[in-house]
Structures are given as C-alpha cells and as structure tokens.
Length: 449
Image 1: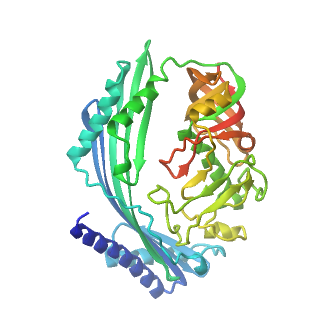
Image 2: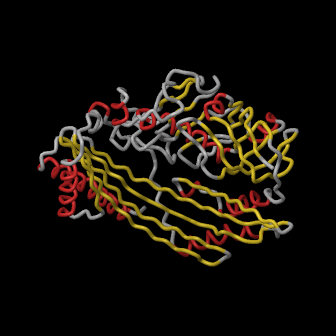
Image 3: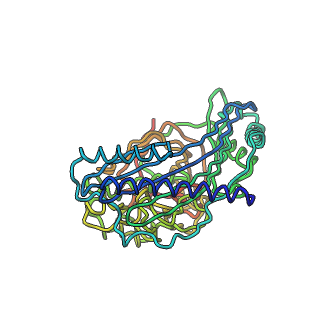
C-alpha cells in the first residue's frame, strides 16, 4: 500500500469514527440515557468464469450505520446507508421514536462499562489485494482450466470464482468506548461435473484467507475440485445399518455449529436447547477440549473486541469433556443472571483440540464404516437434539475406501453423538471461523436402500 493510500485509509476510517460520534451526540441531545452506534464500509470484487467465458463480474460498495438508543429500559433501533449529518440525525430520531413504543426490558442496555476493551491489540487482519479485473479473470480461467483438463471424465463446469473483499467497522457507545477494525477476506473456488456410464457427479473446492499470499494456487484449487468430483463417480446406495461414521473435516465443523446453537444464550434463556442445565456436566468424552482463540493473527474469526465493545479472551467452552461456559452477549447474560462472555456477534476462532491421527489414520482406526463428505438438508432439532440429514461419501472396509455412496441418511441424537466421539483428527480445516479436524463417531444409524 502506498503512502497516499495509507493517508486516504486513515481519513476514511476517521470519517467512520466521526459518524458514530455524531450519532451518539444526537442521542444525548434527544435525552437518551445510553446509546451505541456501529458503522461499516466495505468494497469488493467477485469474478466468475464458466467454460472459459466470463459469466459474472460484481463490484460492491456498501456502507451502513446502525444506531441503538435507550431511554431507561426502553430501546429503539434504526439504520441508514446515508452518512450525511442530516441523515444521521434522522436515523437517531427514528430510533428514539421507536423506543417510545417498545416495552420496558430490564435486561436491555449497553455492555457493562468494566467489561469494555481498553487495549485493542493488532491482529494483522488487513491485507488488501490490488487485483485488476483482467488479473482476476485470468486466475479464474487458470483454475477452471486445470480442473477441466485433469481427466476426460470431467465433462462440465459450474465455474471458478475469485473474490476479494475489504471492510472497516467502527463501534462506539456512551460508556466511552470507541474502536475500529479494518480487515480483508479473499477466496478462490471451483466446482466441476464428472460423468461416467451416463451418470454425473459434482464436487468443489475453495481456498479462503485474509492474506492473498496465503491462497492456494489456481491449479491446486482446480485440480482438487476435479479429484473430489472424480472420486464420487460410480456412487451406489447401501443397505440400512448401524456403523461408525467419520465426518470429513470440511463438514465436521457443522457438528460444532450445532453445539454452539445449543449453548448460545438466546437458546438457553428461551429453554430451547438440548444442553439446557448442562453447565459443569460431562457432554463430550474426557479427551475433548473446545476453546476460543480470538487473537490468532490473520485468522478469519479474530477480533480484539466483540460487537458490544467487550474485550475478547481465550477461553474454554469444554475442558475434559465437561461444559465449562456458554456463548453470551450482555442481553442473554442478564436474562440468565450471568456475565457476558464477549460473544456479541458470535464466537471467534472456535477450535476443537486436534488428536494425533490424520484422515488416513482415522480411516484405519474406523476400519469399517462410512466416511461422510457431503451433508444435504437441515434435519436438526436443537431443542431435542434429534439429528437426521441426507449424506454422501464413501464406504470403508479394512481402513480403506471401497466405493462412493449416495442417497443415504444418517441419524442420531446430538447429545448421544457428542458422547460417542471416538477421535478428532489433526487435519484441521482453518478456512472458517470454526477450526476443526475430521471427527469419528462410534456409530450412527445409516438409512439406505
């Protein structure tokens, strides 16, 4: 980034901070007892190429101001994409007007002053990519070409995409907190279709990072997508049975997503969670540790403070298989008579501690069972824990993949499934906010032909 661009960035970021302060000043002028304001500005480019031709080019520029005002225990919220002083004042006026009609809620309000971040650490989140349109198109074509040329059974393509995004977010409240974060996210993806004996399969692959230098190369992304497609050709059904099930790392994170839904404050105070009243109880086997790492440099989920300005911290949700903490913002914490965990806006870099085995080792450990590489539909009930989803993957015998399978359903109950985790792999997928290796379950019901 040039010196001129750095100056422009600083000016732009100062404007965001100024807008939040204008909103707070107007809220005070209208008699609000408390208020906060969140401002975001982002821009990006996405290019998709299919069969060598440019299919879509999307530029986006977005900006938003969200204002929350509190008059005692009454609250109102309004938003705008216009940052002019007149529009900011109108937005605060609208939020104040809404507050007159809302019911009092003793749990509403800003985060407690003593929980707010005072030291905003640098996490190396901002890595702009000066990518010209022609360069993006060339990369997408190279990615798709490598996928299509890998094997003659690759007969069609859903395309390859390149995306680059940069955004800044400022948050301030009347407790005196003000913070701003600028970050980037870049990605490359490819999906292709293979055909054998008149039957078709598709699969995909992608790479996503904060720093464009860390992206996988276009040939690697394309060839990985093609190989994942080819290995699914010749898929068949299997009969209904009970067997061990191994969730491949890219989809194993969905199990942790269901866990998060069950320990989120909003589910708990509504009594709509299968993990209700399970704090300090054994929920997983004793070797399982699940923890947040919000301060990892460059990581997708890293943040020095949450959406309420509360400082983020490394913390364990599960230690020795025992549930040690919930996922709470200030509102849900007050509803439960607890303290915020710094999770307004969600968790940040949630990690399940990896074990010693890679995917190959987990297959040998499983010996005979199902390797799941795709989940279909959403048959999950967070209130009861009942779990039933369509799936595709591979049947494994003697620790080796035998053939691909499709049109099956895997079913169980999450509470039981969590207790029967046999292994967690070291093949950690770090592309998302949940960092997870492959997960082997002792058994599930597999419904087939």
